[in-house]
Length: 375
Image (tube, rainbow, N blue to C red):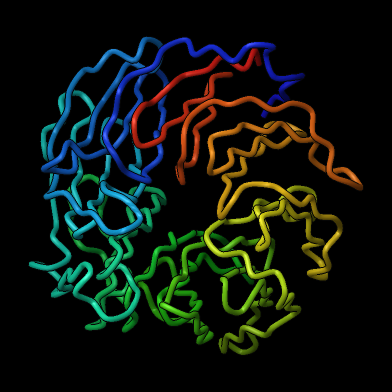
C-alpha cells in the first residue's frame, strides 16, 4: 500500500504487447500475469511473465461474443495458488493449471445449470444478454460463482481444487456485478447484487439471510457492493447510491435503508472506500467524493472521464484511469479534489488496471502495457 510520490515525467512502458478486445482486467501473482481477450474467433486466456511480457501459454475458452459495446470477455480472471479461474461471456467457467493452462475442472452455465445465453436476442438486460461480466470470488478453499440460474442457482459455491459443488442458492438472474465475502453482524456472508436485488446468503451453506429488491433500467447492475462493517452500499444509474444496514434479531435478518443519495446515479463504476469516504467516477462526467456515513457529497470535480473511470487505492493516494486512457494521480483523503499528476497510458477502455510490485499494468482493446510507477 505504498504511495506514489508523483507520476514519472515521461510515462514510457517497460514493455507492451498487442492484445485482442475485452473489458477483462489483467491479474498478477508474483511473476505470473494472466489476461483474457479474443482473437477474432474465440475468447482466449494468456499467461505472461509479468516482468518481461513474454507469453508462456494461451488457451481458448469459448466462442467470441460481441455486442455494440465491443468484443471479448468481460469477467476478470482469478489466480489462486497454482490455479487460474476464468469465465467467458457465454458462461463457460474453467479452472486451469497456472503452470501449463491445462483444464483442471469446468462447468457450463447452460449445460449444467440451464442458463441459456441469448446475446442480443434477449429483450432485456442481465448476463444472458450482455455476457457474464461479474467475476467469481475466492474464500478459503472455495470459489463462489455468479451463475445466475433462476432455478435455484443464482450463486454456486464450488471446491476450488476439485470443482465439487458445495451449495447453490437463489432464484435471481445474474447481472454484471461480482459477489463479495464479508463478516456482517457476526456472520460470514456472501453479498451479491443480482439483476433484481441486493442479497446476503450464509457463507457456509448458501441459506438466504436477507434480500432487498432493487430495480434498475435494463437491469444494469454493474457495480460491486461496497461493504463497511455492517453496512452495504450499492449504486446504479436508476436508483443512485444507497446504503443498507444489515442486522439480526433472534436469528431474523433485516436490511434497512440507512441513507440514499438519489442524485448520485453512478452507472458502471464501483466506488472505493478510504477512511470513511467513497471515491468514484460520478454520474455527470465528474469525479466525486461522498461521505460514507451520510451519503452527502463532499466534493466533485467536473470534466472527468466520459462514462467511466477505474479507481485504485495506492497508499494514501488514488489512481484513476479514465475511459479515454488517462491515468490521474489524486491525493486521497482531502477536503477538495487535488490532482498530483496525469499521463496518457492507453487508449479507450473500460478496463481496470492492476497495481502490483510498484508496477501498473494497463490494457485497452489493442495492447497491454507495464509501467514502473517508481514505488
